[in-house]
Image (tube, rainbow, N blue to C red; front, side, top):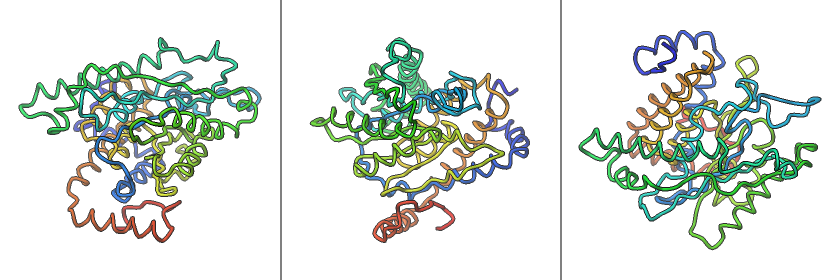
Length: 365
């Protein structure tokens, strides 16, 4: 029963059968598994480092439906989902990234920052208010995270995930949600390549507003539709020591027309692509930005939000869950020697100037 969505076990054959008709999807998922320790070893994260997560909205948090006037897109290009459909797991992913490493109830995680191309001149119609579904859903994700942790702790004598998870559980009442919202202008709607420049400028504005506070890293979540890639690369070029990763929701490649969305390093910073937020969670785990338990919580949230999706979208989520299970299990078998070798190779690549644009293929090792 697809409405139950329980892929681990009885639905494995169902997934394999469905994916047999989707060879390009199978190829995409194989590429997704190529992000490994070489990525993680390139990171300059440190335990407990606060993470400022920044997100686009259209085609990143929810589908634009590909609406356009005379070929000019009004927000994005994604026609796979109905206009306004929130992507399964997106809110839990944002909450988990923002709270990763928070181990003290006195430490407030940084709120989600919105970098959107929506025109401030039209704010009367497009304003993102605290009462909007988007903002309320981010708050619900924070609460759901606490519920997941409490349920797991109650079912286990030992704290889930060890000492880290014990400390995470005391953050139950953190009032986390959406913080600063930085808009675009009508000019970017008319001359759309300027969207990248606007989002980059908004990033600089956000960074300046945090000056004088404790050290933090930045993560940008965008999509492959309208210039988020270019904006993300500008952020990296300006502050490679502060940007931890760029996540790009792949809304442009299809089974019939696949694009090259392999992951790579730009100026030493990971640029990764994903089709589902389960896939994004796996890659964040590989980068050291999420715990295994956080991945499980995102999977659970995505499953709860997926019951009314078309079969093809269900298949994507199911495959990415199976991929996460397989990849995390494989990573748990890595030896210290293999990790040291990959880290040494990563350093050698950077010193040779090969990191920018270097395709990250685990088969290399």
